[in-house]
Each structure stands twice: as C-alpha cells, then as structure tokens.
Amino acid sequence: MTDRAKAFVEGLSFWKCKVDPQPLSGGITNVNFVVEDAGEKYVVRVGGDIPLHQVMRFNELAASRAAHAAGVSPEVVYAEPGALVLRFIEGKTFGPEDVRKPENLTAIVDLIRRVHRDIPKYLRGPSLVFWVFHVLRDYAGTLRDGASRMVPELPRLMEITDALEAGIGPVDLVYGHNDLLAANLMDDGKRLWLIDWDYAGFNSPLFDLSNLASNNEFTPDMEDWLLRAYFGEPPDSAMRRRYAAMKCASLLRETMWSMVQEIHSDLDFDFVGYTAENLERFERAHEYYLAL
Image (cartoon, rainbow, N blue to C red; front, side):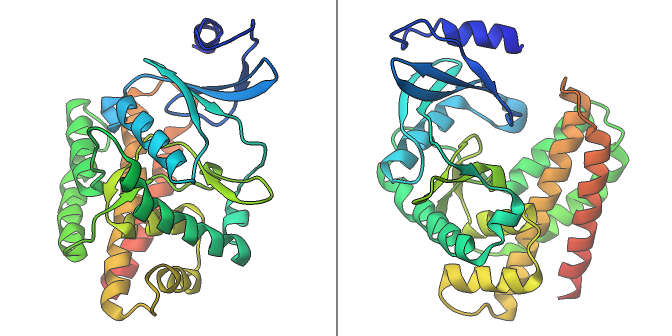
C-alpha cells in the first residue's frame, strides 16, 4: 500500500519539480507523506472514503478548508480524489502529557471554542453530523453482519447506548472535530494547530470535551476545570452527569471502533487487546456515571 501510495503522490499534477515523498507515521484512516517541492514543504494525506467508519473525504476537505479559514488548521493547497495536500507546519506534536499541562490546556480550550464557533462561518457545501449514538448503532449492525466475536455483548451495549443518549438530553449544536487525540494537536512555538478532520461534523460540544479528557487521561478535577473553562461557570450536578454520559459514549465508540477493526482491518495491530483495554475503561466510566 505504501509503495502504491508513494507512486500516486509522486504523480500528482500539483508538483513543480520531481519529488521524493517520505512516509509520515501516525495515519490509521489514511497514509501520510512529507514532500518537499520547489523550496516548499507539504503534508500529503492519501486515502479514500471509509463508509465503515463514516469517513467521507468530501467532508474532510470541506472541514479542512473551513478550519484554515477560521485560523485553526494548516492551509489546503491542493486536492484531488484520494489526496489532500496541506502546508507543512514545523512544530511539536503533542502527547497526552503535553495536553495536561495547564498552560497548554488553557490554549486548547480556546482552540476548541474557536472550532465550535468559527468553522461554521466558513463551511461550504454539504456537511455531516457526527452523532456518536448513531455511530454506535451502526457499528453494532456492522458487527452483527460480520459475525463478530462480540455479538453476544451487543444487546447490553445497545441498551446502555439508549440510556446514555436519553441522559444527554437536549444539546447545543456546534461544529466538532470529534477526534481529539493528543497527536492531532501541534505547537509551532507561537500557537496551537489542530489537524486531521476525518471525523468532523456537527455535534454537541460535550463530545469534544469528553473525548479530549478520555483520550488524554484527565483527572476528575481536570474535567471540572475543563467544563468551567469552556462554559464559563462551575458545572452543576446535572452538567456533570450529562458530561459523564457523553464520556461513556466516547469511550464506547472507541471500543466498538476497535471491535470493527478486529474483523475488517488489515493493519498489523493487536485490536483484540485494544478492544479489551478500552472496554475496561468504558465499564469503569459507566459505573462512575451510574453512581452520580
């Protein structure tokens, strides 16, 4: 795949000179390369639609363009079916420990707020909605269709899904990134950037907040701070419960994503172990939610 993808990138009509794409690690839903051309440096993301995971490249392109216009993401300089070319950002890719630093976390909350508020001002064309409870139900259907080893667990997990969705209640609709891994945040020394818009779409702000917290191992005190910083007031018991419900949903989505990968992915990765790890995290979060 990498050799074919490299040849594809070499042949893009965008280049001014002959290029030698260098693989960039970290992609799961796509293959990434760094390319130098005529004194400029670019990142090329190679990948097609993945309906199985509700990744549609027209949506990623529109989100990436709007995110750049909103000042939160690198510029898209070229696109064609299967390829997205962006300006390279020289900076530090975050790890979870970077996300948890107070000075970074303050800037990250501001960045998330700008994503939610500003990107819709620049978004063009059709857009997806990322409603995690639909994703969970669709994953359940995929697991049944594929005779997954986890099929016996699905009735219980879908019952929990319904209860969590009811626990969320009415939502404020914002434009979400919906994949706030530490590796999707970069610091160029002057400001933060948010990259990789595969799962972008309209959503509740609680998903990005809980997704950030669950992906980066926040403590309960940090989660209270996060809610206060984003909403501008201390969370009450109702807000904590709604947030906890969404955190459960975020963790269950990661768990069921891995279950689907078990039966459909060709990657050399221990998805069975990843499923077990995330299922345990989900179960702990769900027990905490029920005790609220």
